[in-house]
Image (cartoon, rainbow, N blue to C red; front, side):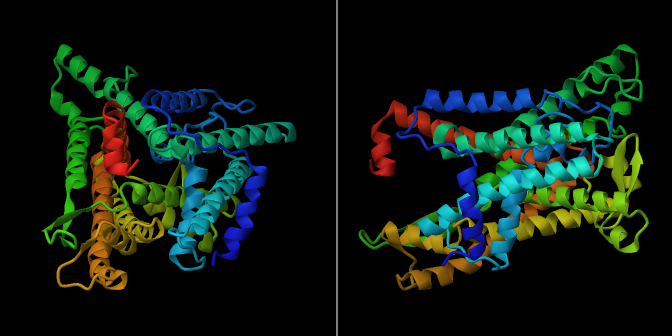
Length: 468
């Protein structure tokens, strides 16, 4: 029976605009078109400044997490995907701790859970907008400016939620969340490679023009191997290395021995090793962002308080808040290898936090999303497959599969946390988490588009795969 929390949240959707599912399956061109439209709208929003604030007013508390949150300071994309992911994060934690009872294999539970997700996203949009304004992130605002900024943030947040919903309901490829993250990562990598702005070391910020400048001025390329908080050669190598590692991990499978009950043929049934895909990294980013947001707000109100300092203590350097202690200190991604060597304990603490949070979210998401042992058992039984030596009942197959799937989910979650954390320490462009997400998103989009293309080129494939 659905939890009372879901029943309370779900009706709120009556007051929230929604996107209808397409009545029939859109063609490849239509889906590509709407996907591009969603990205273009997001990019336009990320370049429209919020009216009523001064560009240099206030501080940017999320400057280290902008890539993961797909947000941009001082624009209509200020909140990015933060409210959507945070709303889902809250419900996931509640479901994982059994505070709400939900069975996503049940259509009614699934409908209520999706409705609750949308309602939570709107609630978090309102909450984060108020925190930004009340926390002084835009400086001192009068009543008129406060209302104006709040309305803009709320409107922009709703638009992003609707864009995500539109893509997820079948109008486009992937999800709005993944598309916006991909756009942000691509923008950050392009800037790191080709930025024409001069850095504090006398060389261009972009690593490519910096190399040409160094060669033309007779300087050694060794100066570009390591740079403080600027794109460097180690970061470039790390970026490509992380991309290769992620591609390799995505190809890893767990092979379960199965036997057909119809033909008595034995073979291996492959299960994806990366069970929860990039979800743990996204949720970890949202968790870290909210820890930083809440701790910075508390510190601004009660500076020097001992209990507040346990959550996080802060200092502002060059208009950027820097956590100097508490839990928030270990949620800030390292800014390259020079930063990491100067802040060894912070970097190691961040790495441990990243591994543990990805482990937790990987394990809980596997169960909540309906991709755990019970889901795989249902697939095997529906395909008239069984496991040799195991009675062909759902309970027995689940009993056999659960330890293997839980172990795979836990290991894959810890592994991607380790990869993302190490990449941040070495200074990967667009952060380690951003590279991990971008590669995984690109792979998923390629597979989805290729499948759709194959269906339209060969209509018989639709009947072969989907029975239609």
